[in-house]
Length: 249
Image 1: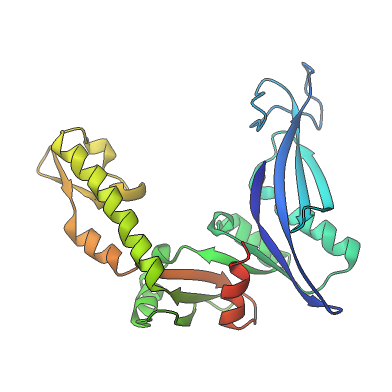
Image 2: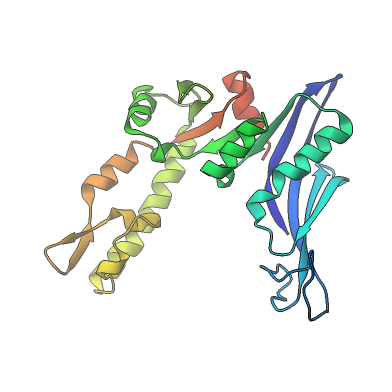
């Protein structure tokens, strides 16, 4: 079962509650596909069998609230909004805020959210922002427990928080990654093909024609982001409420 992201409904008629969107597949012991049952990525380990994709909204207590069924080859990223819109129509909800991790942050999903006039709080990929935005983030110079707001564009702002504990965790993770890279360098097991932006390989560079080494400059630049966490939103909630509700994930 795949959990796509937490969802939070803002106060309406005196209510405030959380629910989650889950996705799973159900397969059928048949040979032929039809308009609904199609082969796709099987979560049951039955790739040859036609299947359906089931999107389900459940409360934090595990109670089912709404569901939708899709073709078995339906892309997972296209399933959340239809279920959410179904739930909104059924219960006539107005003030709904989608809270999800950075996995939802594709151009296609952002366009869909905005076209549907959805409010959202999403995990921001702050290192991938434009240089102008990144300079503003680093200029905040936040200390432990502090937060700030950067206006990204006309629709969106990015809330930035900083914590010492997160900074220590970021540094420890990077050190573990660098130790693995250094071991591979010593054993001559790194090749030109591994100099890319995947994971900690972004700290590698080529010197001359064949030697792969650590890029010390990139490592120092990366350290500047230790402890920082970003939240992309189009809501009018306070920064504390944005950070708090993202924490529900």
